[in-house]
Length: 64
Image (cartoon, rainbow, N blue to C red):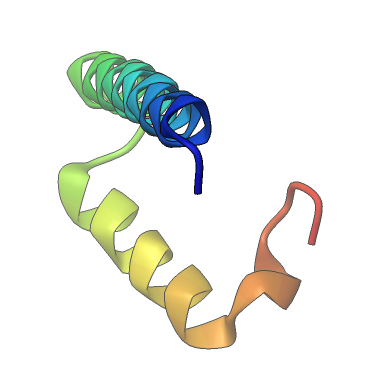
């Protein structure tokens, strides 16, 4: 692998980490707002996440 290819790979990984961080932050903010407004409880959120995880990707409402 050439040095430039290595640098490009590291830059791509850094960009991915930034996107993942921003996505996780947005999701945490959304969950916090829903809990604060009394729409859901943290326990309901955790239970639903476990259900989706157990069922696999087929159950995901987006793209599944």
